[in-house]
Length: 565
Image 1 (cartoon, helix red, strand yellow):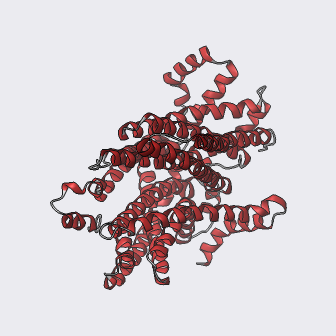
Image 2 (tube, one colour):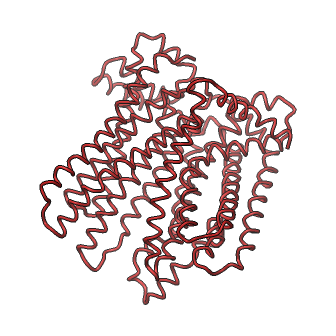
Image 3 (cartoon, one colour):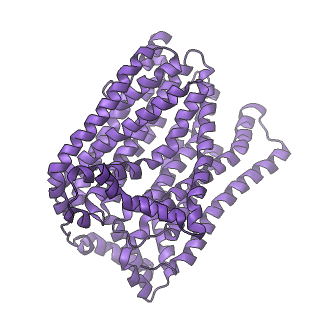
């Protein structure tokens, strides 16, 4: 234990020194704690209202609350697994201090324990930020005692230990099996496995049965099927069965069994992966130090793309665009996340294709318009996550080679603008794709179609500017692995800012959308004063997006000339 704490001490001392630092650095932690508390409050209120709405339905309310919790746990689990696999490659094989540690008399168990803790902290903070308010909301709505919070926290910790252990095992097996110079091929395999896993687990939840009770012979059959757990072999099911008595009021005798099952599985997973680490880490680390060739920059596709750019932009801009393209294509972490994104988009769109048709056509249209409006928030969360993962580390990816840009006859402001527009194109394409496809699946009317699509497009521009600008403000050019940048203070701050901005835009558009939609269904017209309020709300939402674009980019333009290696 003492050796493990010794290996963790540099991280702790870095945090302690930051807290003792004078000026703005000392205010970072209290500031981010305050923003996190505000985000928690928003998530908490939303889930309390949703659960109160569910519990108002005597027959279906409890089942809906349990099924919602099951889907949330499965979503969190997959987010942690993918994030942990990516982080494990950095902490166990590519970290800049590993050369010194591997040359020291550090014992394998202490190294494994310290790197395990670092991996779990770096890969789960986002889930903790968005997950803890959910459990607090469940405890509040169902009037749970203090034991609910203690058991759910312990169960969630066991889930994180199991997912982190599984991710570390996957990373160690793949690095030991495949040469690191072929990481691109390796992560194509990982992406395919993730796609299959997401699909299989998602099918276990069977969301279409939750939305289509007409397919059952009776209401009791529907309730029976929806009450069944997703799979008895999933740790998320064990957590669900552990907290089920606090929601339903029965099944208290199963709590000790599932507590023991979670603790035993977590401890067993940690120990088994630790034993495998002792025999496989050094060979994997040796392969991780191998170099890679420069085949990508010499490929015909890059040469063809260069010729196309030559017809469109000047020489400086063309070279900067090619630099960004090569930086992105050589980053194995981004490639793996792109494959994961493809899998999640399929599941994301599938959710909308199974929405039920209600008996009343007007009610069906109203439900789909409501879902489409809520989809703005979901798309905003997806785009914000992508911004933190992909766009925020782009300046850190320059690394020590940034001195070339500073010494070159090119404006650093131009470097930042090229970064912004280079990533704005795929981000906007993705945002519009999600908005347009889901809106077409839902069959929205012209007003809702335009509002949802325009809002997602505007948020995409704002999130792109926010991620790029904050990435410059918090850039650390000494990082050997830019993928670790998203675990820092700046990335967390970017995620919180983006979440608050998306929430503010949605709240400002609630009233005008409600007035227009209800007027179309009931009154058939909108009063003259309402036009002013509707316009004012949309203008305020546009103002927030404009601030997201202007403020971070202006700050980034000032900061980029001050960056030092």
